[in-house]
Image (cartoon, rainbow, N blue to C red; front, side, top):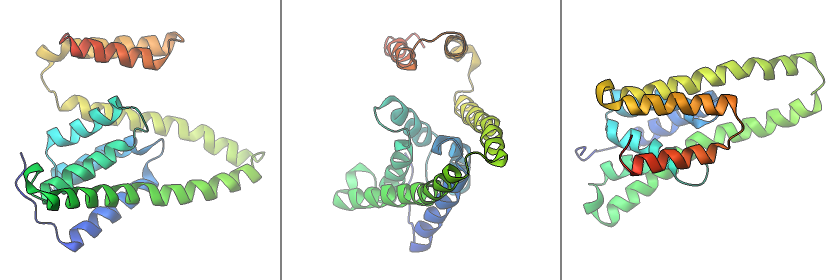
Length: 200
């Protein structure tokens, strides 16, 4: 468990501005910015532990709803750390809620404004070759960012002799998604079942 954090107003502002900058870099969704979130929240500031970071992503991915919820969970955990944890009473809940508000506004506001503006402009100019080329060029960038996030989450295990079933399951799932039309929710459900049974 992390020690109680003492975050100043400038720390909260720094968190907000960091997430606003990530918002504009998160091409393909907020999950693509997870490596830099890890660098900032875990490695640089030590506001979250590795376990809190990875469990925020895992829980948000497993829960129904948008996957951006992992940002809210990171903000919640950060706020709890700043408010003496779950035993801190209403002050912890207030700090956790502030963490959610700061991180979610930071990650959503700039990209939402940019997306709305750019989409309207691109729709008006959709026949231009530059617009079509930009859309085609963004695909490999999104794939590379998703792969870097997957690599980061894999490094937290770092026990290949014990975790080999996870690697096999990942490879098989990738193959099934690539070569068949099986819906991804079935694969997620199968992974949850195998995890619940303790097989992976």
